[in-house]
Length: 136
Image (cartoon, rainbow, N blue to C red; front, side, top):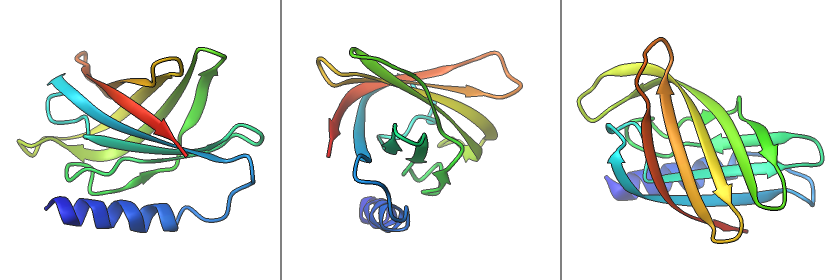
């Protein structure tokens, strides 16, 4: 299963297409999933270019079927953090419950901390996770 997810991740990154020289990849490994409800993946990859707002998010988990959520936007960016908001249709948890989600990923640049939340659209609850990011 893990190899399938890794293969899907690599295939999706290759299909992200050509990007400008200032494009960067933010690779976040989410390790604290206490309040994730099974909707937060263990890895989120963000391909971003702040010069032209070219944001692509790969949400590589079995529950998200390795889909690319290409509706991502940079919500905030400054010297301390960058926050990306993106949607994913048809995500499902480990208990096979489907919903459309809005994700918010905040990367704290000083310590490379990742804070992610997932809000199922039309519901009141929210799911949270955290971990570390690396850039390349």
